[in-house]
Length: 356
Image (cartoon, rainbow, N blue to C red; front, side, top):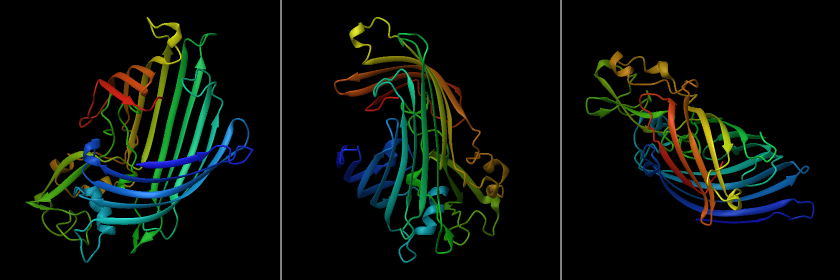
């Protein structure tokens, strides 16, 4: 539930002012991610300042409360959980109160707002929690799109787009480095990003370590059987799980927009057909792959280096976008060109509410 209001002409010079109040319950298990639940609520205030016809600056402040529960005890989550858990009640839910600031720059020379055929757009944005918040972290994102018409009537258009993102913690908490909350990770895959792969499935996956029936903890000083604790490492077994995302993302796409066959000319501005090649990766720059070499060789072989930015996936296919009375709809057929053993692929994908 989100209640928001924006006045785009708060001043006659085009300065905007707006705010929002929101409440959300998220179940990661239903989003093709490793299990956890996140209940959040908050308020935000935002404003925008036009520089000229093509450029605009935005900024805002906000408060957010998160309650994290039912966390699946995989290695990467335990790395976060062992830092922030309550020592008196280690099995309790985690709750955080954070104050955020955000800023951004947006530039557009597109010839129209929906289904553009000429021009470009760039968006640079960032947010961070202020010092003193329960969690201290930052996120930065950059998106760009270029449209190149190949014919005078703009029937054939070449689209090139890219996205870069990086996030991490800063400062310390109880003599530990602050860690990016795992629910703030980047994800990729699905009809709105890397087509040909299931939604949110590209990138690092969870893994579990056990010594006998006891789960191991990556925290040497924590409870449980640490992988690096004294004992026979050959007793440790590893199993992998579902996608968890990462703190860095890079995606790119080249798309050839073509006239939709057998379509009445009156609908050319509401239906778009294209052929595309997508590529990209999500990775975790903080994942210490070498620290797990203590595992027996056959168990270590089950792990992938989730800090490797070069594990690029790629796909090709066809997409049809329709500005329907119910909202934008995107239908895609895609086939992987480059994939890895644990990747989850899908040929057909559907998305409503967002176009490229």
